[in-house]
Image (cartoon, rainbow, N blue to C red):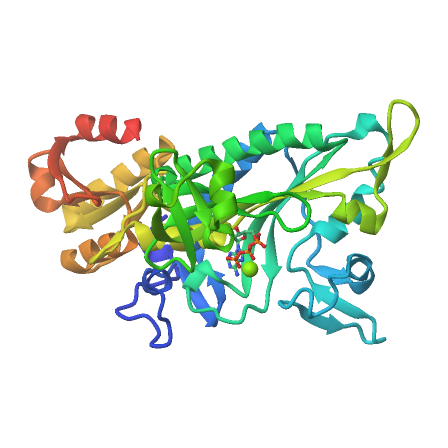
Length: 415
Ligand code: ATP
Ligand code: MG
């Protein structure tokens, strides 16, 4: 992509009412636009980052047998009345609306009910189970406070996978498998070392659920971390009984602030009871389907990554999350001619290049490269063209090298 063709521009300042660092940086970089508190538009660069996060999640969900679908955001109230969750007292984050004839609709804050109902069309025999539909979908939640930028949206992206199993044993096997898939997701996102599988309340269906909590000073959750065992306990279930249960003692645990980047949950037959989702077992008897739900927040993850991978000059994306790998800067007339050629060559090799072809001061181009956080900056100037060289600078540590054309291409190929 040529910067001259990108309709967004970098900004000196974020809106005064934006208090979250992640949103400030992303807005200044032109990654996102703030519509209102907790509601953000993804602009071209932001859309690319979001897609990269989602693609990592997608690959890991497909590995454990996920079937990707896309459910509707508009929901009839009936299906939610069946579970008791249409009530604003039970689910306090609803956005509701009406058809012209008065029929009430809700904008889905999650999808257990509609998916359970949908699956009645496809599940009837034990041979149909297990099955793991999932989606990436915008959820609507009227969150009380929405001051954490992308990390707490009123409209946000969620990956939600639901498991439909024959019984608890089949469920438990999958639960362990997807827990490992979650570990892979966070490792690939570059936050594996600071993300803890955390014991949390299991609701009324199981003793625990598990949250994946990433340590962060801006986190809204408090967890108690066991660094050696790489597990944690959410403060909501931090008590003597749970400690005994897990064989942990208070003096081994450290209190930390964290962001919930995902969770896995045993639902048991709560929703199959409510919506009458059954299958016929091998003996011909009717059984309830056993369910689980598994969320990850790609928008929240993107906010967290922006918050975590940043310095005083701007964002510092890892290569696999960055919207582009290389920020190509041309300086001067000969530099521009050479940069044009290099841009074609690198993009032809499948390297993702953001080419700053604007007629701007070098300092302004460098500052944008830094604010945007593109991992590698390549500079082609009149002076460098004369010596047949290219300058390569790494965003993460500012390390600078001068390379021949061949050496440069070799280096970038390896990324
Ligand atoms: P929280 O306790 O932070 O409100 P939650 O328990 O309501 O989260 P779930 O309903 O389980 O979250 O949603 C699954 C995932 O979606 C969460 O793990 C989180 O990553 C993400 N998520 C939840 N709420 C939001 C939000 N308002 N904005 C962005 N992401 C969210
Ligand atoms: Mg919530």
